[in-house]
Length: 313
Image (cartoon, rainbow, N blue to C red; front, side, top):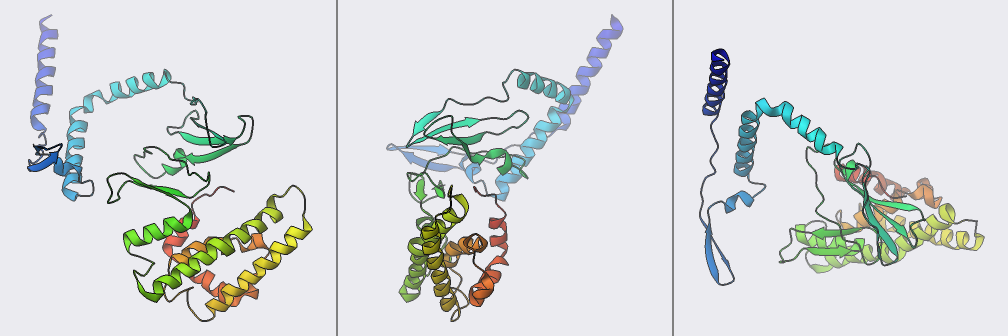
C-alpha cells in the first residue's frame, strides 16, 4: 500500500515537473477599437485574424507545440478514442438529394476517405452521376483542407467562382469564364490594361473566343466525340468554320507574339481550346503561327499547373 502510494506521488510529481517545464504561450495584447451598431468595443486579440502575418503563424505554432508537449503522454488514448468514434460513424454515408434547376445535388462519402464528394444527376436519380468536386483529390498534398461550401452557377456549368476576399461586404459570386477573367484581371491588375486602346484590343479578342471560337469548337467536340451517330452536315459545317477560325488566329499571330501586344486574358481564354486541337481534327503544322504561340504559352509555369488539374470530360 505504501509502495503504491509512493509510486502515485512520484508519478504526479513527474507530471507537475513536466508541466512546469513547458512554457505556456501568451498572445500579445494589441488594442483595436471596433465599431458596430453605434457601439465601440476593444478587441486586444483582433490581430490574430491576420492569417498571412508571420507573427500570427509563429504564435499558432507555439500553441500547437505547447498542446503537443502537454498531451504527449495521452497520445495512445487519443488514437484509441479517435478510432472508437470513427467506428460509430457510417463511412459511406450520403446526404438527401435536392432538386435545383433540373439537377439532383447531393454529397457522399466513400469508405476510408476523409472528405466529401459533391455530385449531381440530371432529371432523375437513376441517371449518370457527375462528380462536381472530389475534395479527397483536392486535399492531396495538404495537411489540412476544407471547403466552406459550394454555390451552383445559374447556367449549371463551370467555371464559377466565389470571392470571399472582395472589397464588398458580401462575397462576390460569378459565372462565365469571360466575366471571371475580366474580374480577376481588374482585381489583381494583371493581363488587362486599365485603359486606352490596348484594353479594348484585349477585350475584342476575348470576345472572339467567347462568341466565336468557343461555341464553334464546342460544336466540333460534340459532333466528333459525343454525338450518338455521325451527322455529316454538322461535322462538315462546324469543321469548316473551325478551320476558318484557326486561320484568323494564325493571321493575327503572324503580326504579334501574343493575341495582343502582351500576354493577356485573351490568350488565357483561348489557349485551353487550342490545347484540344486534336479533338477538332486540326494539325497545328498547318497553322505555324498558332503552333509557335501554343508552344510559347504551354511553357509558362502557371499554365503547366493549370493544365495538370483534372477536368470533366
